[in-house]
Length: 418
Ligand SMILES: Cc1ncc(COP(=O)(O)O)c(C=O)c1O
Image (cartoon, rainbow, N blue to C red; front, top):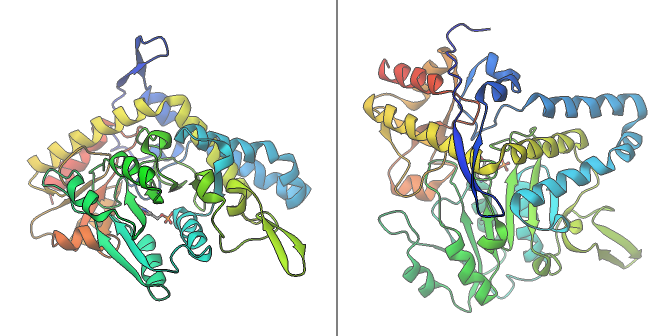
C-alpha cells in the first residue's frame, strides 16, 4: 500500500424527494465505498471516464461465474445463470427508466450503436438519401459509421449549432429538422469535456416528427440521472466499464420498441433470429433481435452487479458526490495555473485541462509517476468540438464517488509543481 494516499472520510450528502414529497437526506459513506473498492488501496484512480475501478462484489461475481464455467462447462454454467443475465438487463432498464424488453447486452457502446445504426440502414432507411444531424461532441466510432454510410447512400451530415452558453441553438435545430432529416444523433456527455447537453430538447422535437434520435449515454450512465422516457430518445447506448464500474467488454443498447421492430440488425444469429426455411428467417421481437449468442457471460453478470451497486447508492447521491469533487478539481486546477477546457453550461465529472507550455502526454506521464491515473483526450476522438477550439489534446481527470478531497488536493499540488 502506498503511503501518500491521504484519505479524508467525509460523508457527502444528496437530497432526494421520496414518493410522499418529503425531502430526504441520503449520505454516501466514502470509507465504505473505498473499502468496497480494492483498487483504492493501490492507486489514485482519476480515469473513471476511461474505465472505473469495480467494486469487489463485481469482481467476485465475474470470477465466481468463470470458476463455474471451468467446473461445469460453459453452456451448463450459463443455464444456471439465466436469472443473473436477466437481472443485468432489468437493472439497466431500471437505471434508464425503460422496459427490460427494450435492452440488449452488447460488447461495448460502439457495438451497440453500430448495430442499431446499421439496423436502420439494412432496413432501407437511408436508401433515398437525406440528412443526419450530429452534435459537436459526436464520438469517432459513431461518426465513422456515418462516413461509411455516406459511401453507400446519398447522406448529408449536418452539425447542430450551440449558443455561446453551450446550450443547443433551438432555432437552428428547428430550421434543420424537416422531411429530409433521417436521423439525429447527440452525445449526453462528450468524451473530452465536462459539459452536459440538454438532450431532452432534441427528443421533444424528434418524437413529434417521427425522426429516430440516437443518444450517446456512454459517459453519463452511472454518473448522472438518466431517464430515457423523459429524454424521449429512440436509441441509447453505453458501455459497462466507465462510470457504471462494470467489467471491460460489456455494453448495453436501448431501442424503443417501435424502432426495434423496423430494424434489420447486422450480425444476427440463433439468439436474435429464427431460421424458418431455406429462404427465410424471422427476427425476434424488440431488443432480442440485437442479442448475440456468444458474449462474455461472466462480465455481463458483473455488469448487473455494478448497476445494482449504483442503484443502491442512488444515482442522485452519486451525481452529487461526483459534481462536488469535480467542481473542487476545476477550481484547484485554475488556481494552479491550468486552463480548464470543459466548455460552458452544466458540468459533469469529466475535467479536461492543459498547462501552458507543458505537453499533455508528458504531464500525464509525470502524474502517473506520482501515482495518479488519468488520461489524455485527443482531437481524433471528437474532431468537431476539439477542432473548433483548436485543441489537439487535453489531460482528462474524472473523479468518481470513491475518490477523496485529499486525492483531488494531491493532484492539484502535483499539477502546480509541474
Ligand atoms: C462519449 C463516448 N461515446 C462512445 C464511446 C465508445 O465506447 P466504447 O469504447 O465502449 O465503444 C466512448 C468511449 O470512450 C465515449 O467516451
